[in-house]
Image (cartoon, rainbow, N blue to C red):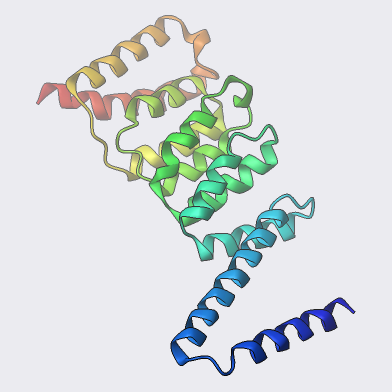
Length: 209
């Protein structure tokens, strides 16, 4: 019955404009297309919250395909959710879209104390975004986070180019020296010491130039 009603409404709409000038028909067509797109986006947004992971992922993929400011801003708003599942699906969609306006909101979510053990996917999302101005924050994550987060940070440090000052490098160097004096601050210090030391030295060596 609902499908019939929609069909009748559409037929009535077409009949109402069929005698209008071509330019006005074109405008009506654009309006109808925009309305349909808005309806589709709203439906996809709702499906992001589905408990069926396949539905949520399919919705995420479609939203990433559509893209645009509205979708990006909506996904960024979801990063403040208390539900780690919602934060994760939003961050993965942002990763696919690749708009670096999501960098600061992602770091804000990553650095919240309540998200400390639920931020690996958020860091993963940063890998396709421009983190060139966040070197100090990345080293903090390398120093103080768990294995999953560290692996995400390592990929970013290896693949991206960064803006930094002499002061930044000295800050990183001093913080690493302090951690070595107080290894309890660094999770699994004995296992990761050599790897972290390698990354610190890779940047600190610029001080000698």
